Image (cartoon, rainbow, N blue to C red; front, top):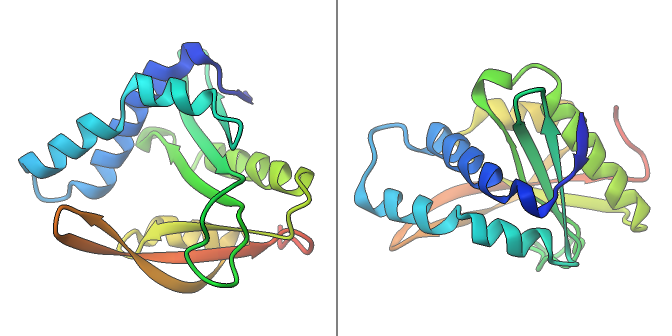
Length: 172
């Protein structure tokens, strides 16, 4: 079931984020730098604040045991590239064991429908350049790579692709 996030979901969203982010990006062990980032970035309080932010919309995928994925749309994002709109999918996380189950696609479609309801013509997102599985997922769902940017932690930069899709002429 896909539903709008509620304040009571904040701790589950934080825990899920830590799981997915760590599984995706911590490939060679956990350094203090990344541990500090994860523990300061993914907190229940930050998710409570996000759920109450009028510029953000968060939907969760929920099974009988709890939340197994979520998507966040920002309607007032600062575009990374000149031809990007203020509509950004900032996060699409699905627990690893639930990936390839259709949850990610359902969450993505809900986010795209929301962007259309706001009158958007396009929406963009950033994805780790080394995350081939996510890149392939977005390509299958009508996104195309339009450039790149860096995700920076401390003094180290990691390439992210900027991908965009046309909301007026959807692929799928």
